[in-house]
Length: 484
Image 1 (cartoon, rainbow, N blue to C red):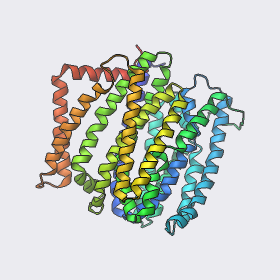
Image 2 (cartoon, rainbow, N blue to C red):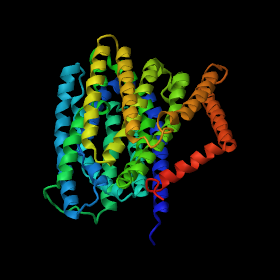
Image 3 (tube, one colour):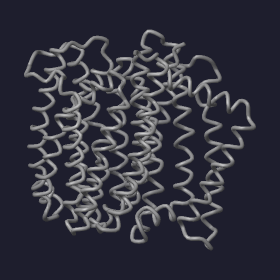
Image 4 (tube, rainbow, N blue to C red):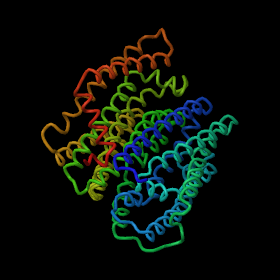
């Protein structure tokens, strides 16, 4: 029996949200355990290797995943050609990763990186087999199956990493986590889609795929979020332990934004693409989506800024408290990059790859320049330069997007007032709990979370406008771009 569009999208969003929540819990458990079994210096060494992996990982799809989701027509010959091109590229990126190990050893005078780099090269070999199967399920909006597979892969990766760290493998435990996750995901997706278009083909790709490849490669080569220039420079001016503190602080604030990007981005990108023929509805969808992101993320920023000390002690342990200044700075960086990605979803859904590329060029010039100046002062100055330059540029991009999509005068920045008020109240509650030293950090965070949730629930129940907004968001996210 065929499901109705509304029911299908309701299942898609629910699967995306539940899947991300499950993976967030799994990742938090992994962070809490691994931070107590592996010292900051080892995390700093891995951060150098992982920064290279992140950069290459953002290039290996060549923009073809976004094109698969966005193009109206996709034949089987093109799908087979895309699959095998992605697999071959995975082997190429694996070779580059293996060669980066000795280079990092020489550049940072950090021995013992060559063999782990070879181990991480397997990440690209096994990961090349799951990119196009993931894109196929996203195009079909089969987010339930995709999120089940991603969650199972996360469980396998974190479990094996905990076991390896408990056995004292240190740096190799982190390598095992990522390689085993990608390997299990590839096996699972290929088995689930074993009747898919996997026969050999190297047929030329349609022009739209070449355009996506050209524009998105330029964007990602210069992407501030992917290039991790901040971590490379910090590794050059500070000890490995300092880089480890910075990297774990980065992970703490980046993990929830990544979960939000994936949970909402998967559905929103597909929905925005479905609305290409309805510009006004597409604009309304995007503007309300930005408001939803504000409601979900800004309270987290308030918690980090007011109760960061307790947050670090609970999540990582007392040995990591020195990373608190970096946590405060990176909260602003994560805020900027979250809304930057939202603008990118809209540009890609509109096929405006050139606009997205030009913004990436501007971002690279400003943020990299600021990071270079900060590196000349101190590690903390580098962190704040990275955060504030990225955050300020995101405000400019949002402003330009609001002007371009303005449906009427009440849309745009005024829509951020309620989320900002909610974040302010959240910050006050967590600040009060933070100064209540009679209870341990975990109990303080739990009490403040309970009070904040109770106030939010009471406000929603007593405010008809808030209930109407929730209903609108539900209809907007559960249907195909809010189409009625």
